[in-house]
Image 1 (spheres, rainbow, N blue to C red):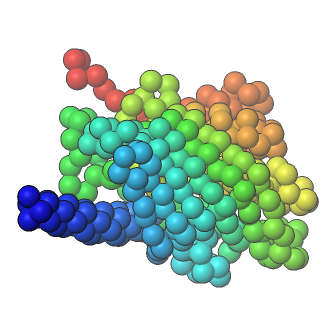
Image 2: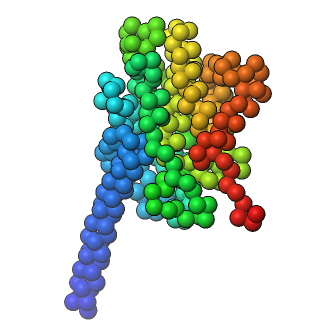
Image 3: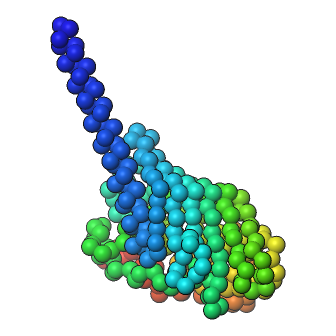
Length: 289
């Protein structure tokens, strides 16, 4: 009996050791995958310090994700995320698009600078790779970006750094942004096509840029320039994002109305039309047609 007990104990120890090894290797695979997929999606150098998957809790944590600046801009990193917590249903991870209940970005740092009259986030957006046409058959083809639906994206304790050289700015300013929240990313207006990782990242960056212009102690010249830059990016992402952005930043809402039309309705119509003509912006055609 004692011999059998030692065998059972030995097997249990072996199972635990193997389980720990697999778990650690899985976290390493996740870290490498997130790092490479983000870099490929944004065409910007990306590093991730660590990833941790809670096997029984449906949670994934990413620590110290750094996204580099577009070519020609001074800051080593344009966007740094202190931590990212994802809440998922494991059953949804096998679906296309992937559904994520919530993403919480903690203590991000966004650096905004300008070169030749163009903001770094505008340059990053313009350099994004073009989407591969979607097959609409529920399966992702080779080269087609991973698409996600995010019920809630929350950003807390952010800092936006405004660099000298921006319009009317002769010294660096750090603008604290307590919180920003976006809803229904990739699923607005009944559209279940999802959003590519690059579009999710640009929505977070644009939202923080708009909010910094709204609450920062900056001049009207810089506010107007930020509104124009953010509007340029937002109009090509989705009409729902532009609508939510108007609720996040009152200054952006005013600037968008003034730039695109004499009334809020006209502005919304122009943004919607732009969205429909942007790759991936059309609603998914029904397979029954």
